[in-house]
Amino acid sequence: MGKKSKSAISPTREENYNEWYQQVVRAADMAENSPVRGCMVIKPWGYAIWENIQAGLDRMFKATGHRNAYFPLLIPKSFLEKEADHVEGFAKECAVVTHHRLVEGPEGGLIVDPKAELEEPLIIRPTSETIIGASFAQWISSYRDLPLLINQWANVMRWELRTRLFLRTAEFLWQEGHTAHATEAEAVEETRRMLDIYETFIEEHMAVPVIKGRKTESERFPGAVDTFTVEAMMQDRKALQAGTSHFLGQNFAKASGIKFQNAEEQEQYAWTTSWGVSTRLVGALIMTHSDDDGLVCPPRIAPEHIVLLPIYREDEQRVAVMAVAEKLAEALRAQSYDGAPMRVILDDRDLRGGEKNWGWIKKGVPLRVEIGPRDVESGSVMVARRDKGARDKESISAEAFPERAAALLADIQQTLFARAKAYRKEHTKVVDSYEELVTYFTPENTKRPGIHGGFAMAHCCDTPDNEAKLKELKLTVRCIPIDGDRTPGTCILSGKPSEQRVVIAKAY
Image (cartoon, rainbow, N blue to C red; front, side, top):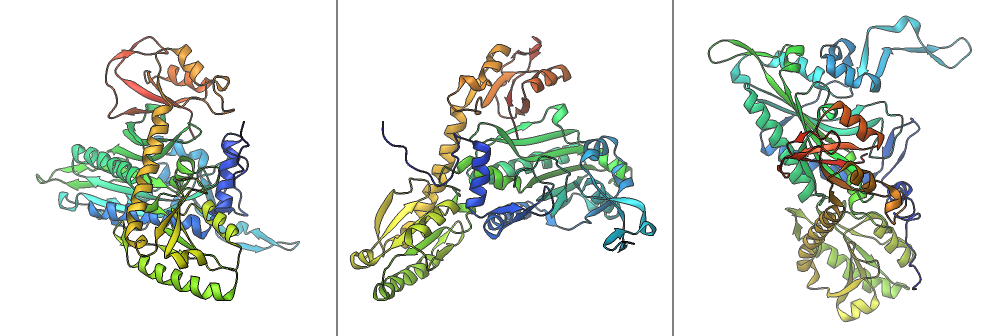
């Protein structure tokens, strides 16, 4: 039996998936825990990925008529109380501001000034439906004001007890779209349109395959009539909710007083939607593509497409190598990929070649290009793809490489998507009985400790009793697929008729 090759990340995915994830984040220098419990500091490399996600989605939102705005961080408590299901759904996660001043205490230090209590407590936004609803009520008076299509890029706070960088933090970054419409049909169409945008972006830019579906009643957004989701499978076979789009009906319009006069001069309540994705997508990216050597980043959202690594031992070699490297960097930056100039970094730090190379492997840069004295003599460069083994390199003509680079990046993008889709297919199973479901999600039935199951496609009715039975197994119905098999069957938990199969999985 051959000796196992050493990986850059320890433990590996098989040894301890949760710790492996934390180590990938650390090794790629993406984020760190902040002094505030449950919050994170997003470092430049991690934030660059978020910026590229943000930029791509923002273009897609604006192409469909949405405009960006900004609304207050603080929400009056009475606003949340206007919609009963909404306040009940978020009450346990709210951070509350009750005072507006600090003063010096009798024994030194600062204390809350008891005389500075607010007339009404303010909630640090867990989401903005209620505060945006107040503005919509002022902005809308006629059917001519509709549809109103608004998006906000912001931070929110949800008081999480168990946190993990990017996946679940008390404060996180996101976008939240909020729209108002004259008819129910228009609002439903908007809800589905934005779900489609999320699917397109996550699959085509992030190379993460998703399943579009409707949430069950218990998984619905608090106060919504219907919630739609895109669900992705991570490499530990758990599901991750990558984005949601909510049809709010007239619930929030009635709570906030969003009314308009229709063409017949009749007063009506608007129909509203909300939809959002967050920095959780960065976590999804890590857990879908990365390996035991670190982060693997799809080219379309990678902070840098190509890193050039000059290799030399003495000054004379340095002059020759750097001349080629700088010329190559200029030629590459003149090329375009994904509609913009290629992002190229020339790493001339005073470090050993191996150290630099492994540093960029851990950061997930799609293409690494080594240029040494022998390469200068032969007029070639050594090119390594991040979707292949660390020592898998190809010699390419330095003159030809700039024109080949875009095709290589496109191939990496497609390879990562195909690989992730094949992994999901391999770990998706049709399940036709409760016993089969239990077996599928029992760790002892797999070779990887702590990793088991995947996506179970089963008939399961949306009832509280079924939800409770699944909860005992630490499972949930992730979604009722929109494009799924609609062949009727029998519920594996209740024995009652079922309209179609649903996706059952463990989830983050």
